[in-house]
Image (cartoon, rainbow, N blue to C red; front, top):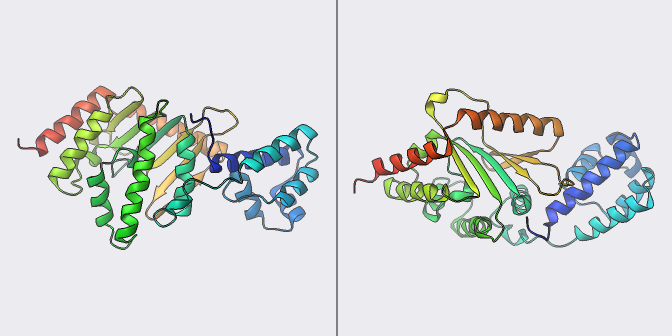
Length: 287
């Protein structure tokens, strides 16, 4: 895990601390909203790190929750750290605000677990595959933004080459291997890259075969980010067309954790999956 946490992780930590203090003080979100004269939705977004907390708001809530001197000092320290500008802000022309927040959290995750049902995960996409995907969505960002989006994707992928890379466990539907994104030549390149990645010690790729039948996440892909520091709870990001949404409620996160474990058991082993990826690539390549 990188020694310096991202802005998003710090915001999340401030929010987690405030939620814990609120619950310990036996206060509701409505109570906190009344204290700040704001909406409950704002309190919720502050506690999940979706929005920043102003110093005056933080001080008011710390007093309202009867925080100890130690808790106050800790909260103010993390709050000051969260004021640093995000390294992902320069991609505002290529990524949505919510996905920039995701990219920040991803950069701090020690373990990334994801389920993909229709496309190769962005972490594993070749440049040609990614470009073909963008060209297939003409109603989304312009050519200039496509270039920037691919640059942002490369920035994310460089984490895989870090001295201390995250562990990545990806479960992909077999349909992903057969969908000809960009044509046979681009798809062969992508599948070969996927096979090469599967040989890395920190990467596990499992294919969920057609024979597995229906499964819980056929409605959409999701990603779980697990952090080395126990102060940072696991977060789930659900992807959909044009954006995504967060799941951070512990009970819901637990449901996704159990679902991922079920899919892991239903999928082919890593070795069987690598063999299948190689076979599909060979069928597409007549040479």
